[in-house]
Length: 71
Ligand code: SF4
Ligand code: SF4
Image 1 (cartoon, rainbow, N blue to C red):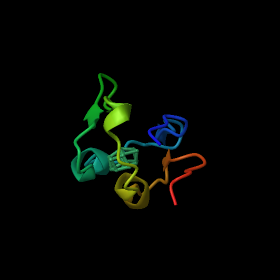
Image 2: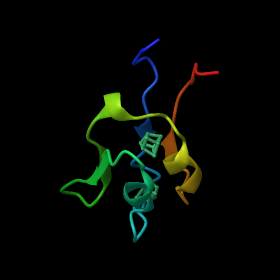
Image 3: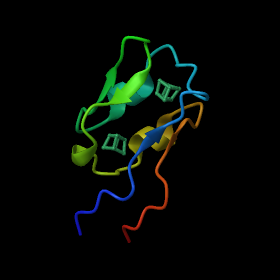
Image 4: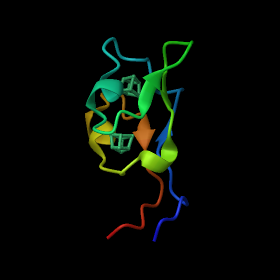
């Protein structure tokens, strides 16, 4: 299934952002970039493997993946 029903979400209300923008550095497919407000933004949702690395490493727990249906 290649559904786009669940997409990674960055809650900007929770994202300080952290000084090193950890999520940008850890994404293995490099789809998180810094926007003009110094906040991380997903530039290509369809390339997200939903690996969960950014979710696990965000110190503010600002990144979530709603209702993942993968295994
Ligand atoms: S879940 Fe993985 S692939 Fe998707 S944005 Fe986060 S680190 Fe990148
Ligand atoms: S790791 Fe979390 S707190 Fe840091 S920039 Fe990314 S979303 Fe914001």
